[in-house]
Amino acid sequence: MEEDKEDLKSFKDLGVCDQLVEACDSLGWKNPSKIQVESIPHALEGKDLIGLAQTGSGKTGAFALPILQSLLESPQQAFFGCVLSPTRELAIQIAEQFEALGAGIGLKCVVLVGGVDMVQQSISLGKRPHIVVATPGRLIDHLSNTKGFSLRTLKYLVLDEADRLLNEDFEKAIDEILKVIPSERRTYLFSATMTKKVKKLQRACLRNPVKIEAASKYSTVDTLKQQYVFVPAKHKDTYLVYILTEMSGSTSMVFTRTCDATRILALMLRNLGFRAIPISGQMSQTKRLGALNKFKAGECNILVCTDVASRGLDIPSVDMVINFDIPSNSKDYIHRVGRTARAGRSGVAISIVNQYELEWYIQIEKLIGKKLPEFPAQEEEVLMLAERVSEAKRISHMKMKETGSKKRRGGGDEGDEEMKKYLSTGKNNNNTGKSFKKSKKY
Image 1 (cartoon, rainbow, N blue to C red):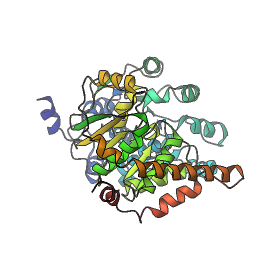
Image 2: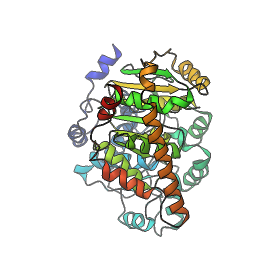
Image 3: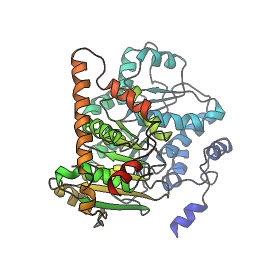
């Protein structure tokens, strides 16, 4: 019954002003999500918030709307709000949502992330934007080196994906940022999990926060169909190709453990006629965004990625998530599979488990409290693909060695040429593995 009540809520019911209700409408946000229903009224009353919510729950709207409403009600001053994010892609996405919501009110927003020219960012800061969305390290760089830039007037601080902001890489930067911003401010902290570090940060920088929990502790949504397939390690690639062939036409994300594995797998799938593209932390920012945009635009329908893409990225049309490598931290499974079955849609998650990963997989089943069914795969049928998969992988390794030796000889960014091929050949390989299916199985 509780959900029915939520369904009847509108943004206006929550106290959102007409201008912003119109902005929500134009973005296609008809009804607020659970986290928005529970947090926006408290935020509009001027309370600090700590929100625990599943990925894809509408967190950005939960903090952006109260900040924009407060900005509308006060003289529109510069550096009004700052949002900290653990990844570049998430920062860019948060800024896009702020800009979309603030399009009708002349909102100025700047993104400060690594991998992008600092001078250009300094020029943007000189235009005195209302909202700064940043990764912690790059924000510190600008606070230290950009003349005339400070956050002394800051009224709102948001820590998004706080559990990830508090790893060793960011902890020192967060401490430094907290020292140079006003203590008289509103603070919103959003996290998928409540770790000891998040609790410590909550005590340090929030004042009597309202705690909102919009999800059970570790859960996956009911519209997600989860399966596993237990395979010998040597046939893992072949099973991946079999699953992608069986589910051809689906938009898929394939998660691996390492950056190199993303490129090898994407190359191998390309060699077999699939429209695959890799994304990992080793790639330059331009290439990461290029790959993401190709995937969002549907030019490539398989994104091979590391956990850099498991959280925060809103890619709404993913049909299937494949765990090619089982994560050693079971919480990462929740974030990975949260890329599909978003906002009430259905989706599929398939985990390819080999003999060395069984222990990790058992931990995942314990965490989500479910025994998952097996993905139906006839071994004889799968192994009919082994020879071609093995050849495609051999060619991929050869290409990787070539690009590696070119780099050592001073031939530029490793994999540049291969990446160009991904992007230029995407249009030629429109068969998404269908021709492969015919030639091999029938």
